[in-house]
Image 1 (cartoon, rainbow, N blue to C red):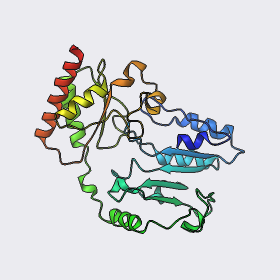
Image 2: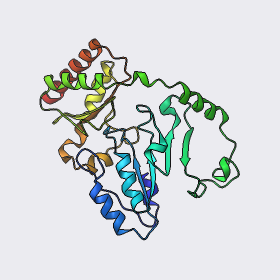
Image 3: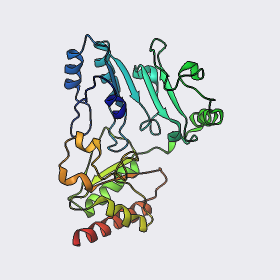
Image 4: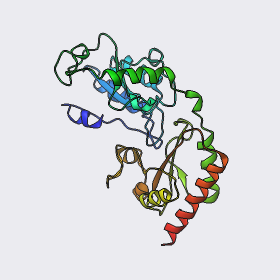
Length: 271
């Protein structure tokens, strides 16, 4: 999304608060400032790194008041919440199929009929928006995935329980992102004075697989755009760890994870 915006002649990044929520006053100000232009506003409904969920209904209302176009990326949101695009009142929406366990390389583009798009690759497939033979197997796998995806496995219990366990063992750790408006199976924690990459590697030896951010940013030596945007203290950029759940973790699993995190954090701090 950022790369696409950078390719535009005119683009502007919206402000977010410390939790990663879009500043509605700034959005209104920018829409008023450019009200005579054809404004397109793009945002992630949920940030897969911070876990923060945007108030799509309020944002859409503001954008449409100024006759703007709403483009919502649902990729990080759709594995955790059922989506009704009509209720969201968005003009364009997208998501990647693999998030619902479809084959990789296929996704969904939804748009209102009166929204005109330029093709990514000129051709006659996909109603003239793309070229090349359609990925029939991928499309079929996505259709089946949408039909059979089990939302009953989605719960915030493991997330809240593990954070409580970790907080009891490591009192100075803290949650990054919103406590309430966040994905139910996302836990993003900062451990001050700990290198998160080192912690990630040590936990892997214990059979615990976590990450230091989103898949888009892993392996990069620069801080993620999300952490910079929310104004996190620079000292904490490399101390944040993301834990996601599949809904099957038991109380014993959570105890094991909390103990191993405590052990490895103490080890890294003692070096």
